[in-house]
Length: 205
Length: 205
Image (cartoon, rainbow over all chains, first blue to last red; front, side, top):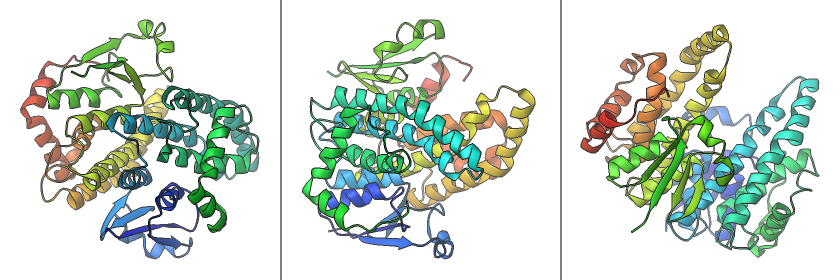
């Protein structure tokens, strides 16, 4: 039985998909959370000076997607065979493409520029990616509500958590995307996820 | 007998790693290359209107990373178990972090500005990424010259391919990174890869 330790900031961010995977799988792990002022003292302990990092039986693994995919494979949430896992990966990559443009809008310091970037992102950029995600869900989802093969995979969990960040800024951003809305509703209904969402720490990001 | 078709432009770009994997595995595939004018009439055939796309037994898969990982898994170039595969993924993500900083610079139209941005990239950005990659190679490489577990994986092929773009900026760059230099030399020496490199089409990028 491997031991798992996940280290990240005290926020959802790039670690939450992995926490969701542990929750769905009903697997124990050490959930280490650093406040911003605690992190500098630990930076040098991490392979790339970044978090999240997953430690498995004492060996450290950086990079949030590598971590999530590893855990998903450990707990059968990655897709039932090699090609289905590839479809899941393609959805994940498309979710990442969607999220790339969002990050600069959050970190822009000039208020006027921030508003402009945010408007452009939600008005022009994000809808294209959401359209692509619906396309993949309909192509690979076997007619169901999950992205791939009629089963919950980490692609659904990743979309769930990143979309929460978008909805926090623009509550209506999924209004024109009923398949994606249904997908998130399906994820929230899963008993272990519903319980996790109810009890997890409420954080700023 | 599985069939593989790779659709991409007639360049290395985001398609070359898949071609390197096919070569290393000595696997037959249809290497479809569209010139720019041809592509226009095929765009709507692809799930996300983009390439590369892999068609596996008639089903289309977009997203270069998903394609590469799938092929690597098919042909035992992905890592020997789940955790080794995760290490390979972490190296790949770290290579991505490096190249994602460079791509916008390549897109810059103003030649003077591009020169300036390139200079900054080489001085301020690139070193930490190359140091990170050497760090991972030494952490996961079991004392050998490949990134993970003393075996060739697609992480080595990906670095080999991406490094070619970096070498065009500074042909001596790897003199300061002996581990990475040795890694590339080991990749080039693999007989099937040496033969592929000798015979592949010469393209602009």
